[in-house]
Image 1 (cartoon, rainbow, N blue to C red):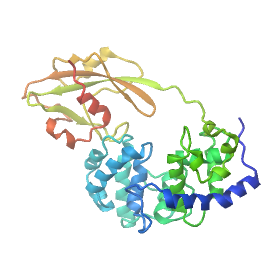
Image 2: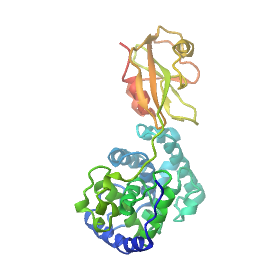
Image 3: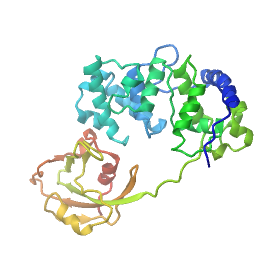
Image 4: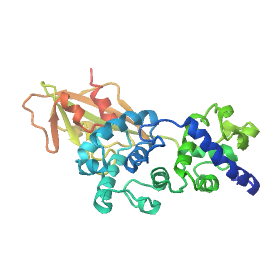
Length: 360
C-alpha cells in the first residue's frame, strides 16, 4: 500500500493534545528502572548512555541484571575507560551483539580523552562517538540533557503507526515516523516525553492485545477508532534466514582445564573467548573438520550439534571432544583455563552452550 500521511488537521489536533495527555499518564505510571531518574535528581548521562547501548536489540528484563553488575564493576565512565577491554567484554558476555561491548569501551576512552569524561548534549557531537547512531544520540540528548530530540525505537514506531494509521511498511516508513514524531514532541520535558512513549509501547500499546481502555491517547488514536490496532505497524516480509555450519573442538585435561583462545578483534564475536572452532560456512563440511582440529587427539563427535541463532543466520555447530594428557601444551595463541576460572572469561552464549554440551 502507498504511504499515507495524516491530514494537516488530524496531525495538528493530535500534536496539541498528545504530549500533555501522555506526560500526565507518565507521571502516574512511569516504569521504575535502575538507570532512570526518579524525577527528583538529574539523569546521569553515563548511565543513560550505558542503558541505551545495552537495550539495543535486548529486552529490559534481560538488561536489568547485567546493568546492575556492570555499574557495580564500572561505576563511572572513568572506571570503564581505564579498564582492559577483556574485562569489559567479560562483563558483557551473554548480552550478545558483542560489537556493542567493544564500541562501549572505545566510546568511554574517547569521551574521557577528548571531552574530559563529560558527554556532550549536542546530538551531532554524540553521533561522532563509537557505537552511537541517530537513535542513541537522540535518546541521550533528550533523556540525559532534556534537549528536544526525536527519539524513535520499536515501541515508539508501534504507537505512532496506530495513532496515525501509517500505511507504509517498515523499514521504508522510518522517515515518515520521524516526521510524525516531530509533530508531537514537545519543547518542554522532551526527555520525559521520549520515555513516556517508550513506556506506552512497552506496557499499553503492545504488539498483541493492546490495552486501549487504559491508553491516554485512545481518544486520538486513528487505529483505535477503526478497530484495526493489531494491524499496525505494517512490516515488509522478512528475508529467509540463512543457515551456517561449523565445528568446535572441546579439549580437556585430567585436571579439568579447557583449551580456549581469543577470537580476532574484528568480525563476529570479535575479542571474545571461544572454544577453538572453524569458520562458519554456508555448507556443512565434515571432511574438513579433522584438518581444523587445534591439536592431535582422539576426537569424539557429539551426534547432536549445538544450535544458536544470530541476527542474520542460524548456526549448527558440530562439537568434537577429546581428553588429552596433563602435560599437553597449548598450541600457539591458545591457553588452558581451569573450569573454576571460566567465569572470568569473556565467553559468549554460543560457547557456553558448547561447554555445557560435551559428547557422550
